[in-house]
Length: 352
Image 1 (cartoon, rainbow, N blue to C red):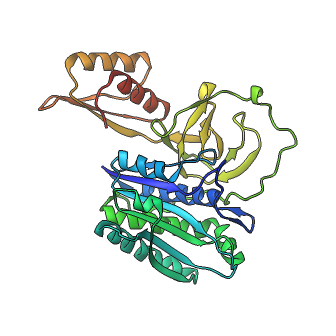
Image 2 (image 1 turned 90 degrees about the horizontal axis):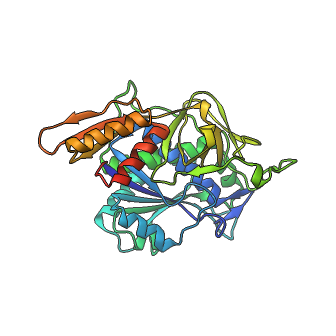
Image 3 (image 1 turned 30 degrees about the vertical axis):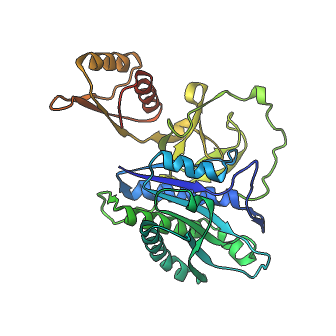
């Protein structure tokens, strides 16, 4: 299982990044990250992803971003950024690795850049080339690492492209394809080479329309946070809305049918799921099943595991393997997946 650590640059409330032409860097790179993840999930298997942030309420110092990736023993690190310059005519795409980069980082940059070239040609974008820098997230990470600069937010023409979801999807898909090729990920067995996954119809803008009446905090449903560890993937059953508040008020953007995205929390009764930058109705999505494999599962542990599944009314089948080191596998989805992982963590049992 390959490990991909992704970093959406900057982050509120401390650091919006570059700002210009009605856009904030911290918001645009979150959209790129979502599109990057969706492409990988639709087309490849055999990988895990962790993120420095998945919303605009989180800010991590640069050293922490590298430290977390190192602690997780990631196989690759990719940081998404948008460029800016005092001269509004500055334009184009470029990517960076550490100035004393390893051969692995050089190979990663070559592979990603090669995948970006057709996108650059498609949109007639200036190729500023492969570069090196002394950026902290490149210098302090132990694994092959790259930082991408997708156009200039300070350039009006570039900014118009950055407001196009198709433009961002093409770049994000190229980044994902580059990482997949570098890691040698296995393509999913599908009729076509790649599956086109629909994505949010618009990029977050600098200014958001304020509702006539903002719900009071005490009136909003309580949200149980899952964090990165217990987050799970869902797929939209139809075109759905992303709401600003947990009571599913103020529809602020849309997601197309079949979009795959992560859930990071839920309200009481699981009526709403917390997703990056808002909430969706739980009935509008279907959780994706994930296989969990345990190790060293004794007969007593098996009995306790089955009792837990029965108590929680989790209908997934527990498949046992008694040869060698006894183990078991189970496929679960959504909040059942959360319950199983929390149970295994509480017991201190090994699983992956």
